[in-house]
Length: 166
Image (cartoon, rainbow, N blue to C red; front, top):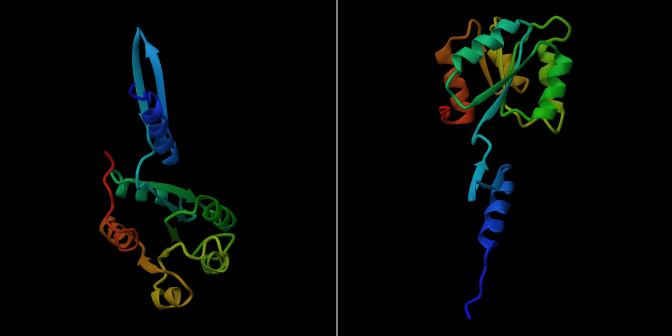
């Protein structure tokens, strides 16, 4: 007699889906079995925006609408350091002129923390100090005001091709 292996394929499928952070739900509805698979969005990169001008994070969000990117904004250095360690963003956009803590200090703190030192940091400032920024560990530099083309070009340089949401 042939060996029946009912449910084995289902168990393997559930294990594979859960390993990717998803879920497989199966239920009987009106005498029929239904399966629902939920998977997280693939390749969604988180970008941390550190700027005392809250409207700037909103502007960047508009610039990047339609791309698989999540922007998280903060206006303080202490919150920036905590969020960088917690979220492990793929990239940080950092202003230099902040009210409580200087952007240079935040850059150094991020560089000195083992959990954040490998995150690319892009300085976005009205100051024109790209050589100093790069010498102090920044990955790239954009002078404000930042255009959509400038932002997309720098993000693609550090994140690779940007996926469109859809």
